[in-house]
Length: 99
Length: 99
Image 1 (spheres, chains in turn cyan, blue):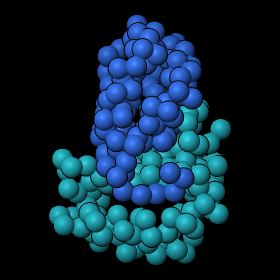
Image 2 (cartoon, rainbow over the protein chains, first blue to last red):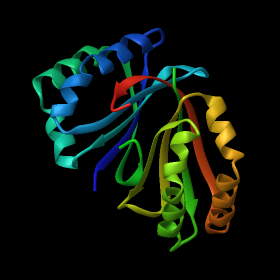
Image 3 (cartoon, rainbow over the protein chains, first blue to last red):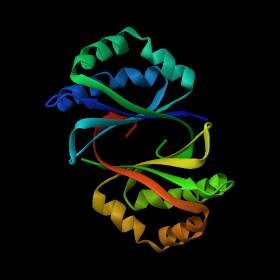
Image 4 (cartoon, rainbow over the protein chains, first blue to last red):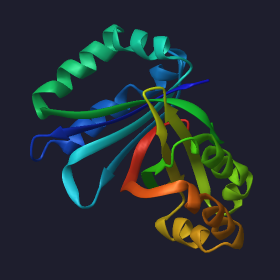
């Protein structure tokens, strides 16, 4: 069954939109890396947190994607704008709509 | 922009799979109610928690879906198997892949 990853990250004040732009900039390349779904969301009540829901063909596809040069470059650009506060939850995706 | 909802719920011991089946049973009807994405996930490390990621055309579509007879019936079937511990986060979906 597909591998799911729910993550959140906090940005430094004023940096949320720049980090969102980085997260979305590489989205087309994710598909060929085995990503089936990548949803980036923000909240009106909080201007420094970004939530990401990801579904991958497998955990191995997700891990391999983190080693891609373009992923590493994007992480490098985003890191100075992040506080280091992350949450994450790995999932086994058991079904749904739109997958 | 689309409305996102990240939720989790805890089930009574041994009830997780039955609640997952209820959540997935109505999935085809969600599309016509304005749901674009509905992902149900579980974790190997925790046998009583279920995570749901939803994307709807709007917050109003999501709220209207909760008043549908079939949704209310499904909630009624699931409630006795839940502990009452929920988390939720509303989002504005700003982009991604697979939407």
